[in-house]
Length: 627
Image 1 (cartoon, rainbow, N blue to C red):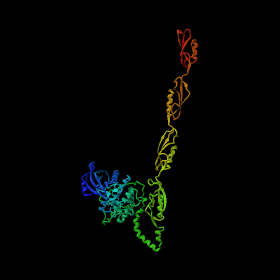
Image 2: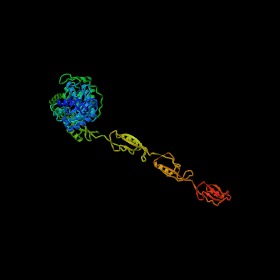
Image 3: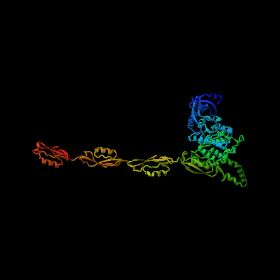
Image 4: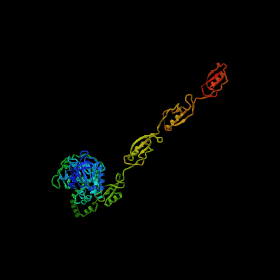
């Protein structure tokens, strides 16, 4: 960016919010300015993109998307992204302002660092990358220029996600590309793909620079540098700076393996290895001051003390043995080659047969081909074509499709004796187990059934059932046949049998009401022979069985319904004498009273009340009119 453009930018109010105070630095993709957020009254760093990038629609869409992703990332070692916006023809990021020096400036000014200082800084870089990887973000442009050492010693990593946005727009900018290519992983060069392991590769190169103050791969053209990534091997740091411990050589080799499968799967896994290696170094080894290869002097350490790293736990299934320590043996072997060649020449002169032994016979060696992600048949063919034998074992894997190779032992690019056996681990796909049929079986056996197929019993609830016996499973969730991960739970509902129904006493109440209420409750009503009752009205319940308690659905309640009292016809007593009429009524079961007219002188019955033939309750009183 020209000086005039910088001067015109200072003093601008971007997006009506950010007042640009001063110019800080220029980069291949943007210029950085110190600004003040007038809305929140705080200093921020504003990164204004090059205008030729903004004219690229692909860049604009990716820039906005990646900026939003980066803004969600919060970690003490990450330069926070506050805002993204545009103002006229300019597109910008508003970020945390970090006063200090870039790691590139530190290395340029101070040369190689002591192992302790290098590992202190590297620990923070990996913590920042681990936070991004855990959030599903990949940096894609890890390099010393994107690491800032704050004035108080805090390490900050910047530009998360920005590399993805500018990839298409910067491939023709030789200066930018050369600076970036120095840290591109082989898979980024060859296939244009990147994942967390690509960040690990670049981080390994940064570690190399921390202890040597030199780039591992350098050249006059980007193509030359890229070629070295794909076909070369990162040199030993200790070969350049003899005070670099072997443990750091091993860490660099581990992170910069050409085969991504041979690197730690994420920055968190790499950090675990870094801290293990650091623990194996003595105080003397950690604080040994290196000799600057350029200056021939003991190098300085950073002027600001970096606080001791905090513990971190790996979040993946990465294991140290998956990355053999033999990766650091390369330099040692190279140092032994003159003696080996001399011995070989002597043996050839003396016996002639030793050469055959090492070059074509049982002692001959070959490289293990990289077969990860190939299908089993193709992988076996590649192994056998390399003069090796293949042994296949299967393993479940959540990400590698069924039938493809997960890994090999020894790993790809390892040097082994011909006719050695390479064990291929082939994916069986995700580990899943079909939920068994539990419905209709005894609940007491469910736990054992599930445990036998790596599943677990989830919640168990009870419910009444008219059709399923108590203790039997009514339903299950998920249903039978559903594929589940190991340890997944299956919830069940267990029958409590038929639901008890309380019985209400309807004695003395209308039978119709009793039938309706009991039937609605799910009970069966049976009506017994009706009986006469002097006390219970006709149509009402004389007795009930059972009278109270509970029954299950469909249980029977028997009702005895009243026919009312016994009725008898009043005998005809008219014209009969008083005594004869009274006897006749009493024999019929009635009581007798008299209504005498004129004193009942003649003693003759003139009528009765009720009258003759009337049906009257037995025991009722019949009044005779006597004249």
